[in-house]
Image 1 (spheres, one colour):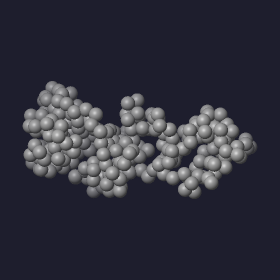
Image 2 (cartoon, rainbow, N blue to C red):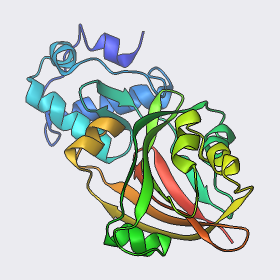
Image 3 (spheres, rainbow, N blue to C red):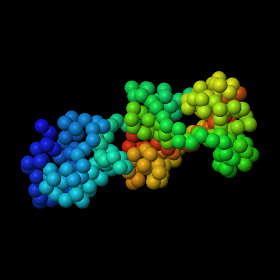
Image 4 (cartoon, rainbow, N blue to C red):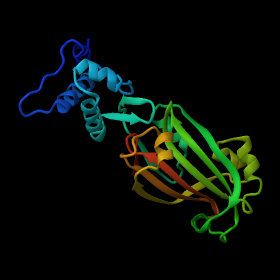
Length: 249
């Protein structure tokens, strides 16, 4: 029986110099440290924790917020609070592939295609691809998972005139490497990665199942074929509670 189970019959009491929310945070932290609450496990609801500890929900919420800031608990929009898992290192290399990255961490990669269509390139995308503004590009938006956890929301842009048939290739397979191979790009390399950080939008927070007060990392990538021609410009949005970007020589 864990400390949190004991709290159902032994509510916490106010102590000199220690707020109730901090006592709750320490109880939960102790459970995590002892292994009683496993990584990825869902924590009881705020109402259940309130009943166990004999406090109001606001006090419980404050404790969970503090644990979230410390990286011990992750809060998923609409799903509840979970014990945080290890952060995945996303290593930027010459050949950075989503599936290989996830499998390096002994997890199963998968993805959901949210959008796939041909559009006009705005100024930023046109600059990234080295084409004229308003040129036609194929845009793929995808939500990527490691096991059942969302770890990346990405948008990929491909020059439609340079890569004839790329839209049809991506309709046949959501694997970018396979789609590029189908239109004659046997291999491609990372030319540039630019990383910034900001708070997520409401939609990003919902899709990535994270709190809006935790930042996301934005990786802006340019990929080229063996001849150095730009074949992809992409934005990746990564939740900092689960992913950190690593640059190595």
